[in-house]
Length: 266
Image (cartoon, rainbow, N blue to C red; front, top):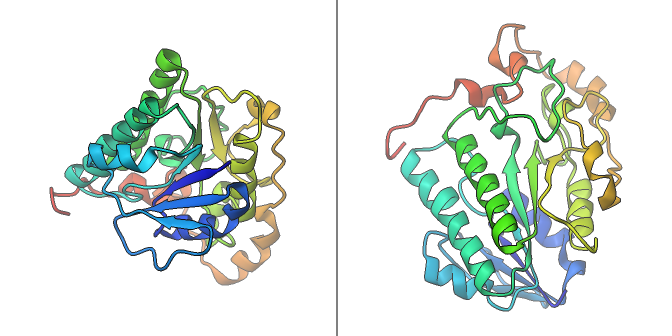
């Protein structure tokens, strides 16, 4: 690609993908409302509030692909989530429609299905069960992406990210973890295949204890290399297990299932 846009480039995941995705394009256009630091040789720094439709239209112009990591990534008030994750994703898809429909990687979330129990194994076509307003906003984003695909031919990968950290940090992550290496390789495949469509993809590594079935995306040719099981012994020795009746041990969404609905500025 000539130019790849990464939104949310100042965040934890965005900062990691900024480094790992550099080989995919001649230029990385990086965007966030937070400080992203200085631009590297192949980077453009473009601050942008996703809630500003005109600014998002300018941001997307000239891009050949989009990795959309921007918005609110945790449970917050509806006002904050609406601006970043509902208005923001609408603005992004409208901008993409106006500028040639560049392929999009949409960072959805496991919190779209957070109220399924951990003993259940899920396929991508099962009904959503969001565990909070954040999860609801990601369900909205997936629905919007499907509509733009059906109506306008906009291709998107809807990646329900589990837990993308350098290594699993707790026992729940033995099922939800995706390594940065595997996430970057998934993004590379999304932009490489001749035809993408609009698949829901579980964002997980090849975890032996995984809850989610990715057999429907064989056509992408993606083969995750890492397995959270490699850290089980370390976690058993260093991290206490939650009680069996703790939502962290019962539900796939973990702690999000017990988070409150926040006040408007919470």
